[in-house]
Image (tube, rainbow, N blue to C red; front, side):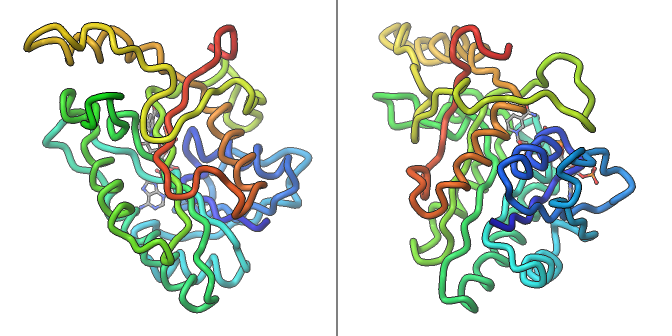
Length: 257
Ligand SMILES: NC(=O)c1ccc[n+]([C@@H]2O[C@H](COP(=O)([O-])OP(=O)(O)OC[C@H]3O[C@@H](n4cnc5c(N)ncnc54)[C@H](OP(=O)(O)O)[C@@H]3O)[C@@H](O)[C@H]2O)c1
C-alpha cells in the first residue's frame, strides 16, 4: 500500500513511518518542515518519501496523495487543545483531510481509506450511551472530528478513528529509532473502551465521575503499539473490522508500560 501520513514529525506519526515501512508499505510523509523529520526509517529509507505541505490545506494533501498514488491516509497531525475553551489547528486539519479524501474518492470512484486520531473521551461509557467527554470535558475538539465523520455518507470515505487515552513512548528510545511495539499488546473494541468497569455507576450524583476517574489512568498506551495497530490494520485493506468505527484500546497486562 502507499500511505500518506500527516504528522510524521510528531510522536505517533514518526512511529507510524517505521511501523508501515516495516510491513512493506510505502510512506509519503506529509510534513510542514522536512528538516524536523527525525524519522529516517533506518533500513526502510527507500520506502519513505517526503512531501512538504500544510495539513490545513486540502488541495496540498490531495495533490500529494494523488501524485504518489496513495491508497490510504493517516492523520496524526495536530493536537487537540486540552482545556474545554482551548483551540488548536486540529479541526481545520481534520476538515482538510476529509475534503481531500472525499475528492480523491470521487475521482477514483472508490472511497479512500483513512485513519483519524481522536481521544478516549469520544468513546461511550457502556450502558450509558454517553461519551466520556460529556462528564470530563477535556480535549473536546475530538468531538468535532467525530461529528464530522459520523455525518459522512458511507460511500464517501472508508474511515476509522483511533481513540487512545494518554499515549507514552516505550522507554527512552529516540524518535529516529523508536522501539518496536506490537499489535498483540493491545486489546481493542469499537465504540466503548475495552474492559471498561461499571463500578460506581450506581452511586447517586457523582457515580459517573467516580466511574471514570477510578480507571482512566489504566488506559495509557504506548505510541509504538498504537502505530503497529494502525499499520497492521491497513494491511487488511477493506477487510478491516474497524471501518466506520471509533476504536478504543488498552494495553494487555505486562505489555509495554
Ligand atoms: N499524545 C497523547 O497522549 C494523545 C492521546 C490521545 C490522542 N492523541 C491525538 O493523537 C494525535 C497525535 O498525537 P501526538 O502526540 O503524536 O502529537 P504531536 O507529537 O504533538 O505531533 C503533532 C504533529 O502534528 C503536526 N502538525 C501540526 N499542525 C500541522 C499542520 N498545520 N500541517 C501539518 N502538520 C501539522 C506537527 O508538525 P510540526 O512538527 O511541524 O509541528 C506534529 O508532527 C493528535 O491528534 C492527538 O490529539 C494524543
